[in-house]
Every structure is written in structure tokens, then in C-alpha cells.
Image (cartoon, rainbow, N blue to C red):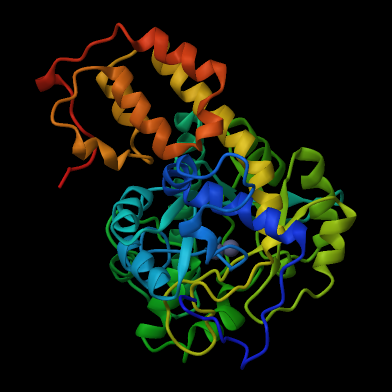
Length: 429
Ligand SMILES: [Zn+2]
Ligand SMILES: [Zn+2]
């Protein structure tokens, strides 16, 4: 929007209402945390105005994409290609939310850093909701973490691994049923489509069916064979939706119900998940339709979010990455809720490190949120220095001022790691 003085065909641009400006200010402060600080330092202390360099963008939209997939689950593009495409579409903050894995996050972060995009580590977790009468339905729950990733990552990873193992078994069962129906598909074919190290899912089976010429397109694969309860459908071994919401809360994440319009019993699912600690639900789509889900969100006091669910399939039926326009107020409400949660997760991660500091733990800490400023340091011999760099790339200045972080740094000030011993987690260019 640079130099856009005469935008709106000569009309004066309407000033956004004060609450919108405040919300926008809050979002900018978080997104541009490092630039924000340096510009604020030069500001007149009495002037409550945005920093001069950021003034032009104030009130402007900072595009967020909350939902997309890469090759690490059932998407078609690599994490870096997803980031590149999001960047070209103007996305400033991107949550990569692969199914049941966070394997793509480090690559996405590396690519995003070069393009000035901020990655929100995310994952879309498969789960089951069981009604009072015992019928089950598949529920997808999105989890969003702070820049340093989840607290208690092992706990989350254990659950994700179990889901992926269950899916592998499920894909094998679907294949068995298809072959019994004389729709012959080879296991190797499905594995090849899924790609290295990716647990095959229903979509991979469907793609194999299209490629083998058994059906004309993916839609037909689902409507004829693979739909819930369909002739080639097989059940997975997903955890209960309530347990997933609770685990997201326990690992320092924000839990969001994905595409509620795909549910048979949205009202019952939302009620039950809200009681388990659900924070938000998807409501906005690229077609802008809210379809009454906004009212459901309001009824249960849930934040209204949305994303494209981009997979990179191509074709006209897919929403483009970055195509969902979220209201500034929604993003503001999300960040207002998420930031203290993420700040607490950061504390717990660093506290457990301070109690038993070792290189392998440090590598784990920086697995998702590697501080890129590290490359500017000629030699790293003090852990406190590393933690300082981590904090400045993960949190805003105000958040870092909290007393607990000072205590952690003090505890670590005596810890020295000799040069050769400290391995940086990702290659430094
Ligand atoms: Zn989904
Ligand atoms: Zn999705």
C-alpha cells in the first residue's frame, strides 16, 4: 500500500475506528516485534503515536493464514514452497498445520525467515467425537503454538506418532477392502504418493485410485468408496476430541475447531469441546460465508477464526493460500488470548532447561524457534547469551521483562558451554 495517498479514486480514506486502530497496533507490535522495539526507542516519549516507519501500515491489514498443508502430510508442496506461495500472496504470518505432524515446521521457519514471514508453529490433529448414543465422528482440531513451539513436546509427539501409526493401519485396511471390491491398488503406489516418511491417509488412497483409473476424480473416490461408513472406509484409532483439546492446553497451545461445517453434530461437538477448553473455531472461509457458525461461536464464547485449508492440489475448487480475509478484531482477540499462553509455555520450557542445562535440551528448545540472530555471533560460549537471543526472537520486549525470565537468565549465567561442544540446530548461513 506504499504511496497509496489517492487510493479509493480520490476519496479521502476513512479513518478506522479507535478500537480497530488499537487492535491493529497490538497485532503489529507482536508481528514486527524486533523492528517495533528499535523504532519505539527513537520515539518521543510523550507522543502516543505509532513509530514513524510503521505509520503507513497502521490500520492496514496484516495478512494471516491460519490453515494450510504441505507434503509432510497430504499437501502437494514442500513446506518451503508453501511459504513462498503464501509470501507471494501477501501473507505475513503463516501457520503450517499439517495433519498429525510438526515435521515441516523447521523447514518452513528457515524459508520464512528469508522472506520476512513469521511462522506460527501449528498442527491439525485428528480425533474422534463420540455422541451419547455411541456414534463416532472424525473431528479435526487445530493447535497453534508460540514461536518456540510446544511445551512438553514429547507428550504431544507421542500422541501424534500414535495417530500416524493408526493411520498407516487404517490405509492398509482401506486397501484390503478396495481389493475385495475388485478395485485393485498396490500398497507401494499409495506409499509413493504419500512420500517419504509420511503416513498415508484417505486422500493418498483416493489419489492412487484416480491415478490407477478406477475413478475419474477425487470427489468420486470419496462419494463411491471412501466416505465415512462407505464400502472401502476403515476406522482409524484417533484419540477422543476432548482429550486432544486438553492436551493442546497442557502443551501451551491454542485449540481451534477446524471446518465445523463438515460435522454432522456441530452444536454437540462444540458444546463438549468448549467444556474441555476449546478456545476458538473456524468460521471464515474464502467465500466469506459464515453459515450460522458465527452465531454458534458467539453462543459459546469462542473466538472466530478461519483459513484456506490450502493443500496445493491446484484446480478451481481449491481456496488459494492467504485468500481468507480475517477481521482485524478476530486476529486481535486470538493474539490477546494466545500471547499469555505462549509466554507461559516459553517460561516452562526455559525453566526445565535451567534446571538441567545440556546441549541436547538446548537443541530441542531451538528446534522450532531458532533465533536467527545467532548467526551474527562470532562465538557462543555462554548459554545466557543464547537464551537472550531466543527470547528476543520469540517474545515482545514487554513479555521478556517478566521477572521469571530474569530468574532463569540468572540461573544460567554460570553455565558455560565450550565452543566445540555447542551444536547449532540448523545450519547457519
Ligand atoms: Zn481438516
Ligand atoms: Zn486442514
